[in-house]
Image (cartoon, rainbow, N blue to C red):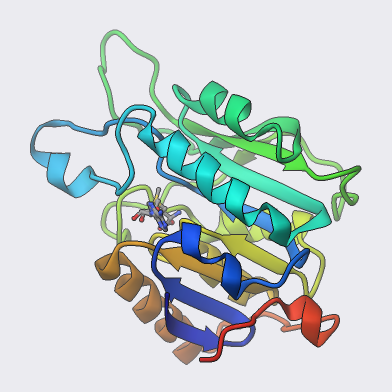
Length: 251
Ligand SMILES: C[S@@+](CC[C@H](N)C(=O)[O-])C[C@H]1O[C@@H](n2cnc3c(N)ncnc32)[C@H](O)[C@@H]1O
């Protein structure tokens, strides 16, 4: 596990998330926010190489996610919230494979406000994704006013994207503010281009992100550096205690 970034309570690690357990203190993760390999084979003509996500392939993705989250369970705070992005075709598999770790409360819908690949004449536009919301124990209350389960945020345009399937920082920041307490720790074991970590910086939460692919991890590191250079940090809050910081690795 290599530490690529470690500032403002936000840490980016490059390696296999199934090896990250030793780097996170037990019972410290307040929010699991992740967009794992979907368990689908994404292949479509010329884009096939670009769309490849490590650990993808029918059923393989969900196996990796289950095994990683099983290993990480000791790090979950007793009232942790989990938000897991899922493809519409594989979300029942994710539900079945994760519901022993937390009780699933809702399936949120991320409405992308239009667009989407697929058959233009015979199918509805694929303009949404499912986000499973689960909580350990009773879970803590959601922050802010009660809102509906459909969250509208524009997708990241092709011109703005660093990697395929990049999630909008605004959507992740909204989720973090609702589900992670100020100063709380967010874990993303499948961090891709680092969107979750950027959202944590913006909202003043601590975070740990892990990415297997060295090239993507480097993209995430560069993005975090750019973000810091732009001075767009949120109101960083003091970790509740040193132990709860959950950042056991030396830089
Ligand atoms: C769907 S992408 C995440 C994209 C991210 N939400 C973003 O906005 O950039 C899933 C990521 O998980 C990574 N991944 C797959 N298996 C992994 C593993 N065992 N450990 C860590 N990362 C892994 C892939 O390389 C890929 O970048």
